[in-house]
Length: 176
Image (cartoon, rainbow, N blue to C red; front, side, top):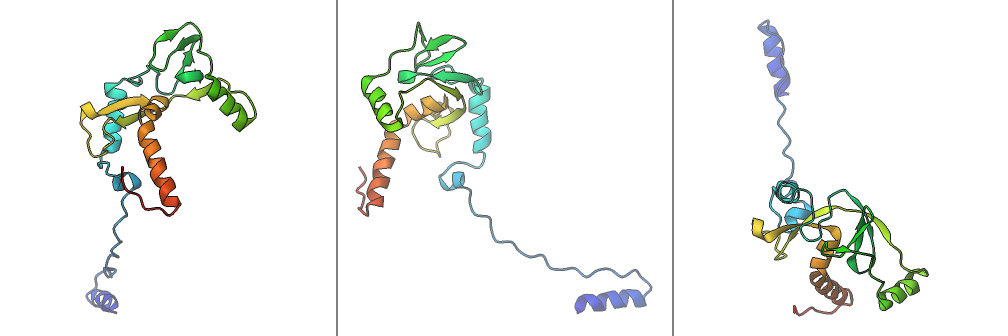
């Protein structure tokens, strides 16, 4: 109603009527993103990009795979680029190592076929060497491909899996 009166007064004075101001609706605060909830800084995307592409030049710091490259993944972490086989640490090999017997039989039992060499696209990740997302010091960050990152974090993943398994069973977890 107040907005209408203001417009009528403007008409009486010979001015162009203006719309009355409508109060802005205050939006509720946006929830924190998943990364922010886990303790990553606001500029994590910039930090990660700098570590992966400026410092490491798009190459895994442990095995030497290039970001976006297609490689063939073999047994025991070995991989092939342009006909040359490399170990999980990036050392040249004459041929891929054999599949470990237990791994071969487990794969056969689970998938009903023997394991094969897989074609994989390499994606670089930024890994926290102390597993603390708040610590973004250069000495604590490494550019790793997905296989090296998983291998580096395997103990953390095993521990988390055990805690989640215990919680799913309804057990209380005494942190180890």
